[in-house]
Length: 123
Image: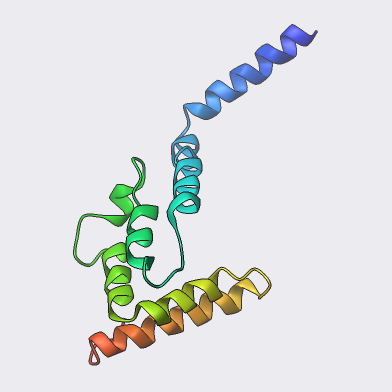
């Protein structure tokens, strides 16, 4: 009985691993652990820690590759005002506040710094 159940779940797991859904989720532990290991909101090291936290053998394609990538734009914002962006990241990660409000506020903060770089641009 137990052997049959083990074989049954092993077969289900094998099917899952061969599915497109598994390919999407296999990178998550690596990306999350890399972020947790490297990200620091200290203004003096924010740019370097942000850059390191998004380096991953799985996710480089998501963040690298062009001057207009999400990572490169965020790095510009950090370079422009590292203290303000440090506070913005701290606020974004403050779990005592409502997630929707944190995300909205972070977007507004990013837009504010972006406008100081390119005042005539709209996102």
